Each structure stands twice: as structure tokens, then as C-alpha cells.
Length: 267
Image 1: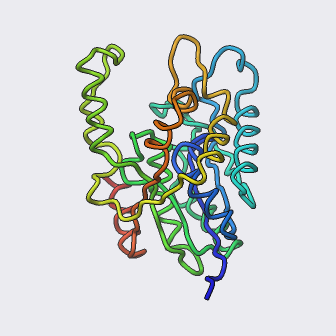
Image 2: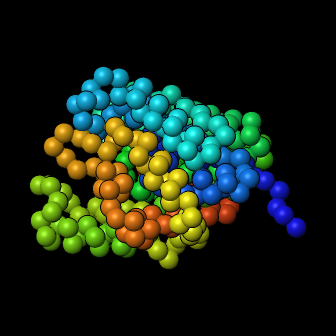
């Protein structure tokens, strides 16, 4: 007996975050007949980009995420309209400075409009700690208990141990920039033992690669190497190894999610 189609709402901080973290899952869910909704919090205007994108970077990045969503089979893309806060929340009117419940109500409204079955945000560390990612974590957890029919809550993440190990090795080989602190990555993402769901997306890597390539502005920056550029240019077998699985933590108790979110926002 086939399962009824579900509606999944993915909330991301910036254009390109969907490509990096959840593109394979989104493409797989859409291909299996589910309705996939993408909510993008910011315009990505503080992202690094080469001088060829020196014009209206926000418009460029929103066009890129629209193309990415089309590639992945997304049924609806919602922009919350916030400015990118920057890596250190230096943009005064950026997303990181918005009221958590204001953002949460906007996300919950999308979930209610779509009768969402699943809501996806970020882990408590915000991945690598970007302030906009931390805001997504807090706001999505709050939104999960504001919905008229609370959806099942998941948080997209990566296993901490291999990333921290790779960073330590890079630092030992002096491949990291001056002032870089590998210790920060000891607290990034999620310990492997806490990851509850591993999604095999190997069959959807062509869509994930195309989604990554759609974000051309983020594949180049004057004088620096971008993660997205490295991922799109690496050999196929290595891409399969690094990108063929996507990782999530199930937050099973919405009330606990609200308590945790409140505690994290007050600390």
C-alpha cells in the first residue's frame, strides 16, 4: 500500500544553503511525489563573491536560488525578505537581529498554508555558527509549536568528527588562513552518535550538482577559494563519498523544542 504524499518545508538561511545541505533530500522527496517547499530567510547580500558580481548581489543570489529550486523540483519558494547579517552579524538590520517570534510566526504561517507534515531547520550550533544559521535554528524550533498542526521537526546537520578531523589536519599542514582557529570546529555541527537520520541521495547527485552550479556567484571570490567551487569541481567518486548522504536529527518533542529554543535564546 503506497503512502500518501507529504508536504515538507525546508528553511534555509541563505541562497545556496539548500544546495549544500539538503538538495539531495529535496530532489528525492519531490521525485517520490511529495510537495517540497523552500523558505529562504535572507537575500545573501553579504556573501563573498568575485568583482564580476559587484552590482546587485542580492538580486543575483535570489535568481540563483530560484533556478536551484526549479532543478530540485521545489513546488514553492518563499523569501522572508531579510538582509544577510554577515559572518559576524555586522549588518544592523540583518536577519540575526530580527525578533525570533516574528520570524517564527512567518515560518508557521507557511507551514499552516501548506499543511506541512515535516519542517526542517538547522542544528543548535547553526552548523559552523553563522548568526543567520543560529537564527534559523531558534526560529524553526519556535515555529514548530506555533503551527496549527505541529509538523514533525528535523534539523539538517553534518557529522562533527570527520569535519573537525579534516580541519585539524589542514591546520597542521598550514593550509588554513592566519588567525584561523580549528578549535571552533570541535563544537560545530552534530556528534555522529546524535544523528538520527541518514538519507541516501546518491541517485539524486546529478540534481544536487546542478543545484550547486546554479549558485555561480558563490563559486568564485577574488583571491579566495570557495567551498562551493571545490565541491563542484571534485572528481565524481569523491563527490559521491562526500555528498551522497545527507544528515538530520529528529526533534521528537515539540514542547521540548520550544523549551530548548527559549533557553538558547536567553543564554
